[in-house]
Image (cartoon, rainbow, N blue to C red):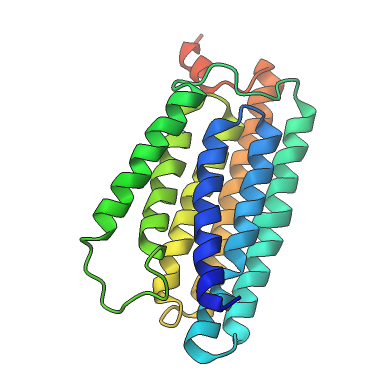
Length: 220
């Protein structure tokens, strides 16, 4: 299988996993789908350099290794550990139902492909699917972020949104210094670590992870 076919197949799977995360109610399953999506994305820099230079360089290997270590292993481990300390393991009453979320997500995907066809790019991408899949991932991550009640799921939406940024970054893989990309991964880890601490304290103090219930808090 050529690198071009592999890249397109990975991008299609990433898109399907986005919709899958909107469809599942079990929080642990959503985290595992995110980890699988991140694992697939980790191989895209390698495939892109194979298409452009014939073989991947150290730059692509380090990005792939950092992505796997952080977004496939460490962050899912932290989120699953927080989940095990609580009694709620499902998203029960989201703002937008699961079937409706998948329908809205499908409309956003169609819209992303329509917009991507009109976007001018300085250089042609290695795959015509990169831009529409990146836009779709950004929008579906944002949809998850605003349509779910559990803090863990909102963190997951933020992470999916970041995966969309990662896909867009493939357009500038050669132009972006390695130090900048590793710095972005570090910022992501720090942000998720802080959010994990916040989620833990919300659950410990209020015995739930529903962020909408925090609206009822009043000063005493």
